[in-house]
Image (tube, rainbow over all chains, first blue to last red; front, side):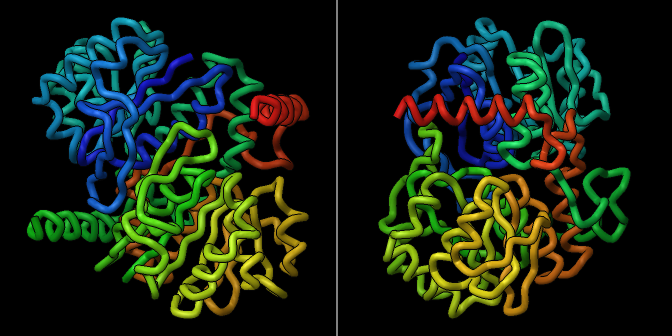
Length: 214
Length: 214
């Protein structure tokens, strides 16, 4: 049971690490973080570095492909070697999955044309530009083993469902217990429909400051 | 606003990365991953490596100390240099926090004596051995800025509350929206009280296999 996760500079760490903590517990799981070259890749914030132990050329097949998002995923839609690798692994995988704007990479690789899919709430138009039909659900399953998840933290929910599909419900429930995933967010601001105008304005201003600083 | 996160071999990645994705968005946030020496540290599963850019000796103060757990945290309770650093940073911090068995490190450093605290459901006795009063809540706040969170994924809930304390409710709600944290776990097995006997048995058997393989 090989689980392959591509890394690139500008990924969002929780997109990868949330599902990782579930899927690593699958029976006979072997997780490999792969990238253009083995080495350490820095997240979109610039302060977290995650190690890729394999180059794309070293990983030619996987049972599960899990593509994280992040600012680097938005840029990655023109990254030929990354998209080629995603297509190659998809051809071998039983499950091809994405979290957040990782779905843009699946889209740019041509894997979502005509399918229902989801992404971060801020990337809906970009997703649809690849022929996907945006579906405002947290986890969207499609025939052929394609599963996309919404923004960042949704990868945990997706991974639990995928664990059920692969190893059965008792196993998936055991993994949920292992990570004590009994969420109790202190607010109810986790979707665009629920968040206040003030929270949206705060986030937009923060985004502008981040861009201005670059 | 410096946020310091210690790394050590055998940490649990989501313990650190869940809160990281929230706290990195705080105004003027500077997150530093620190360890005995700068370098890459491997998680408890053995397949994820996270980079520490600073040695403990390079980081002498922080506003927020966030201590992750994992198998390495259970071992770390006898790691003098790690515990010394935790005590030194705690003396400078406004907030000293832990996720999962990170609380055992706070306990071993002498920072939880007489306080209410929480930890992963499997580590309650160990926590109490340090003079803490175990409190079965997901996030436990104490006077003096000590906040402990329960297992693994609870760090996200804790970080949102901490963000509110530091930057106000609108900011914290904006961060929740940014990571689209609108949790929808497919099962209700995320606490020891809720999980089935079958799930508990599965997890115990998996743990035994992991130990046998080492």
